Image (cartoon, rainbow, N blue to C red; front, side):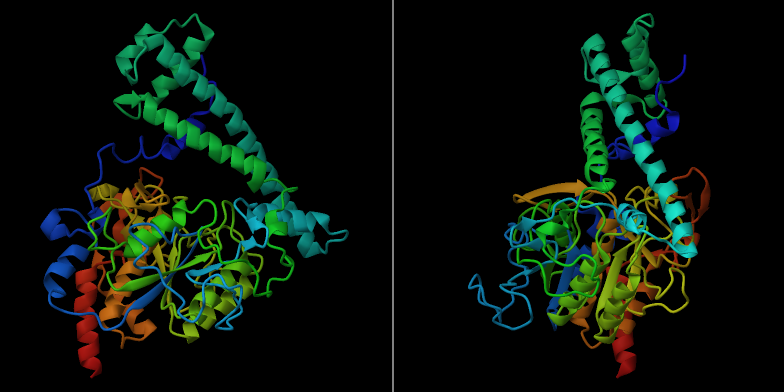
Length: 528
């Protein structure tokens, strides 16, 4: 008998299923990303130690505005409402651009993926958009034809794979359902497989699938597995319905000229929009109120969160990201968190110009390295600090690229999903099972380099609030040069092979608040 579903696909599903079959099934310690290795035996960034020791009886000098370019932020969340940026030069809901910045009623930020008739929720992938554009051209030159054939192959492979996965999703779901009916229990162990009737086709299929899953874990919790299956199915359905659908175009909602990458001043002031979980979670990590006794504690305690909505469920567009960066810079943000990414950037030049603008204005950009277990020294992940081409030598000096750290330590220190790169990833930060804010005054743990980046943004804002005299280049150097090195053999993300942690990033280290504050003090003292 052969598995009805490829083993590779089953393995991919296991990784997708909410960490159930990931590095371990134990729960992460509460507030672990803020904890200290020496005090708590957990490799957090030492925020709590910094507040109780170094910063005790000290007052920050300047409130730092951190812009969250993301899917949206619930501005009235109980743990965020007191730290949201408020545009004091704008009168709320009067329909007038009071501060004449080009954006009407932008009280907490701006939404570049909305319009007069509503908001964009889903969008296509960049591969789909570039492929469709080239396909529609009546004539293509040699360079365009070569690129088109390459994209056509990639598009067809990915859509075919997604269709096959969706069919197999139904098979796995049926197998789990069959198993629960036969066994009448939720927790399934290896010995339970003996109870299946191999002559029954449905039971035989369920037995074989469960047998493979039980090679990865001691037992299966069908409830957790079912939740993972549901999320997987939704992911596949959205990919087919929106991401790889060449006929889908949500841009009419916005009413902008999608072909003009340099267009500005479009959108609306709904900074939450639909699907704000990701952005709200990111915002909480940076700056959820530390002293209100609710939910959780963000890293930084003297900041304001500016919400800039520019990331749909799908791939963000270059013009939106460029405009989002410029908006944040022009309205006072000193740190910009960018927990998003994609494999193609057809209008990279407009993003590059926005990055240069932020660099000129002394604004720090913090970007998530991505969650595909890839070496991004070799595989493109946009946006990037390199100007013009992906791996160009000329790079922004106000940029930090962040990989994700696991709470489990030792060989499992790097998160199994995290992208890495000795040249293109600067530092690692906690990014697994990070408990933070979500819409409707909720809280939940999420994992990703999307969670690691705001940890670094929070550390940056915290240090800058006490040492505002640092330039952006000095702050970046302080953060990276003070990061705590890990000199140990670890699993290469996405593989069972090992390497030294030093080989996964430029610093080979984890961001740390205490060390950063100490180095900031020395830097400022020497400057005097």
